[in-house]
Image 1 (cartoon, rainbow, N blue to C red):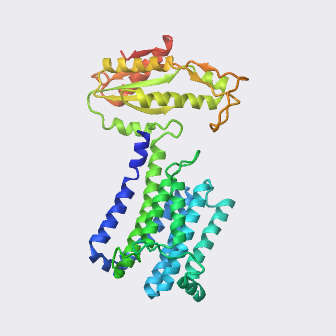
Image 2 (cartoon, rainbow, N blue to C red; image 1 turned 180 degrees about the horizontal axis):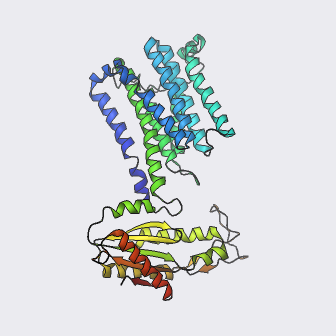
Image 3 (tube, one colour; image 1 turned 180 degrees about the vertical axis):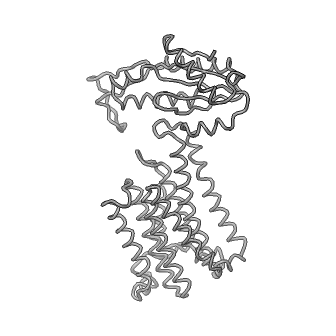
Length: 415
């Protein structure tokens, strides 16, 4: 389910790419779009929005990629306006090399902000690269070099794929690397960069025989705008995810729970689950172990709970079960409580490496300690006594305190 949720976030970019491809292939009348000043300025406007969003949300890597793409659009538009074919070939060559190379570099680097010493260094790298993309095609010797194909690997492999061989190789190498997950980094960033590169290379393929030559500028503008939209979509989707998903447990947050409350009908139950003696676990084993216990409980809630689970705060979780009576919810939640108590929680050994080695060796110097983690649950249902979700939640919270007073590791319903 988690992998499915991750992939569904990229349905809009994939849909946009397919739509643009079909539109440009099947509708030759789009060749006149590039004559519109508003359409010609669209990539600039969208990239400016992506750059500003990246700066506003402290996503400097998106800002830098936006600046780089802005230079590509500027250089290509100059070539189109002046009608110099060799200049256009030079822009394609430089963009096909610089864009994937710098994208891979920024994916590897951790977020460092914009107005920092590292940020200024990265900005200098981007600005110098953008300068090369804009200036080099203006130089006569560079345009002659690109036309002879002796100094650069710029020959296209097929009439439908008019991308320099060196750039195509960079694309094929970088995109799979971007799709790999990186520990302790935003897992959405890599796919966003990969899809952005897909749009960029489709735009750079404007000389393809797939479309008429007089449609080339429209092709470039459409896919360049698409690349900017992917960056914007990533920023908006990632901001939503951070606002509504708990980073530690990957469960929805209290803000998401309140939105769920607004959609509830008349038949529902709400349960509040609390980890027993959680403070003692933190004090004895450390907060890192406490975080592992929270993830341990969250995994059970994602797999076994009868309704939607939320991280409410601290060691408390809330479960909202729609179209579920109180008696049905009690049976399912009591089973959940029992499964948690029956499954031992294995403490991480101090000698255990953070990453699993390729050839693990058994260690007898230190045994792994197992502890029992239990939970207490309070539950209430919507009724004349508790007619609103807020009141049902408050009643479930009172029932939780009664469960703790009566020995913990049990479930109690609101009276």
